[in-house]
Structure formats: structure tokens, C-alpha cells
Image 1 (cartoon, one colour):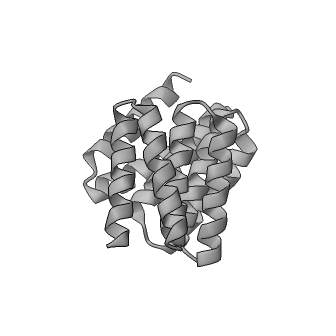
Image 2 (cartoon, one colour; image 1 turned 90 degrees about the vertical axis):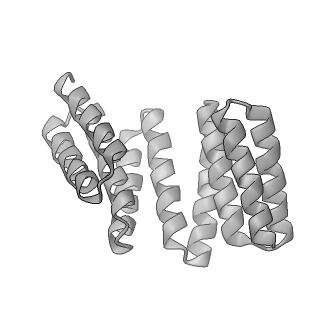
Length: 178
């Protein structure tokens, strides 16, 4: 089916990204994007744009990443797909954080958190809380950062997410040295 073919291209792109085969990853994602557009798969197009955004982000091509995330966000909103919308907002928040735009980062991640809570997506809620904690830490707001990170840690523990728990503990540890 068309959906499975698109998913296979996305998985191959992700694998190439993981193994740092960035040119091959870009080729896979470009093919996947064309395929989604040719088959009028708007949700698939939004997902692939997120993938391309992540690839660009990893390559420190921040403006290209921003463009991909913005396009994904626009499509998600057109479709009313709150899950992709939340992921796009979270990605924009991380990007803004990376380039030192902390107010914008906070705004995007806060919107992502609201969507995660509305969808009762606890894992995404934990990630958004962690990202808000990191932004607050970078802004020197240590008490607020600790509160966000503690909330995130509690959710990770409640989900039995040991990797998430370790990540939150690491972030709390970094906060203690800030």
C-alpha cells in the first residue's frame, strides 16, 4: 500500500540519519516527500517534513529546519492533526532554544505541552515539561526549571519509562551544577 511504502522510505531515512549517512538520508526523505505529495498524503507529507527538519537540525542547518517544521505545522493545522501539530511545535521550541531564542522556545513548547495534555499523551507531556525545564534553566530560572523537571520525572516514573527517568535525572543533575 502507499502508506507502507512511504513508511519504509521514512524508516530508511531515519536509519541513514542514525548511522550519519546524511546524504542518503536526505535522498530518502526527498523521495518520501515527493511520494507523499504525488499521492496527496498530507499527513505523510507533514511527517516527512518533520524528518527533514530533524536532519537539517542535526546538520546545524537551522533555517532549513525551521522551514520544514513550519511547513509541517501548517499542514497539521490544516488537517486538524493535533498530534503532528504538537510535535511540530515541540521541534520549533527545541530549535529556538538551540539558537538562543528562549522566549520563542518557551512559547512553542508551552503550546506543545497544552496539546499533549489535551490528547492525554503522557510521554509527550513529559518531554514538553523537560524541554520547558531546560529552557528555564538556560534563562537562569532555576526554581521553575526544577519544578518542570520534577513533574517530567514523575510522569516518566508513572509510565515505567526508565530511559525517560534517567534523562530527567540527568537534567536535574545538570540543574544542580548550573
